[in-house]
Image 1 (cartoon, helix red, strand yellow):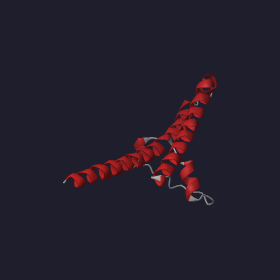
Image 2 (tube, helix red, strand yellow; image 1 turned 120 degrees about the vertical axis):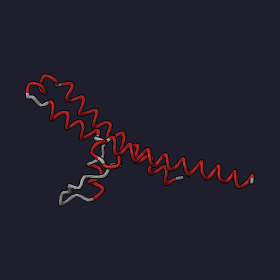
Image 3 (cartoon, helix red, strand yellow; image 1 turned 45 degrees about the vertical axis):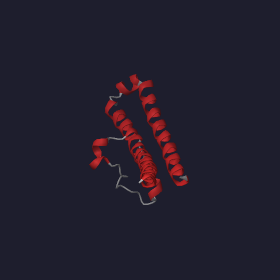
Image 4 (cartoon, one colour; image 1 turned 180 degrees about the horizontal axis):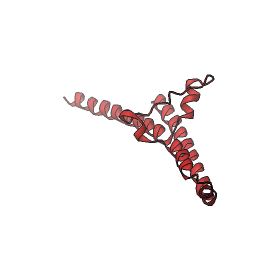
Length: 117
């Protein structure tokens, strides 16, 4: 139970960080719309926002994975943090939470079934 709490709390923090990054990027672009339009940078801003949110169409089988592009000084933890998007973190958080409740209720109802059998 403690391990599940630690995992979900770290995923929640990561999700909030990813949401904050996406919100910052969108606020910057919307706050300076005239500047974005004057430099014809709509596509660039769209790509910046999509990098922060994540695009489910880029992932095969809807499972987010870190990018295969690694720098020489990147360790796996830094690489995962760089590629954390609201989609990838939210996906992992939902899988962990679902797995916990499936285990909890499966064990609970299974125990009741065995006890009443």
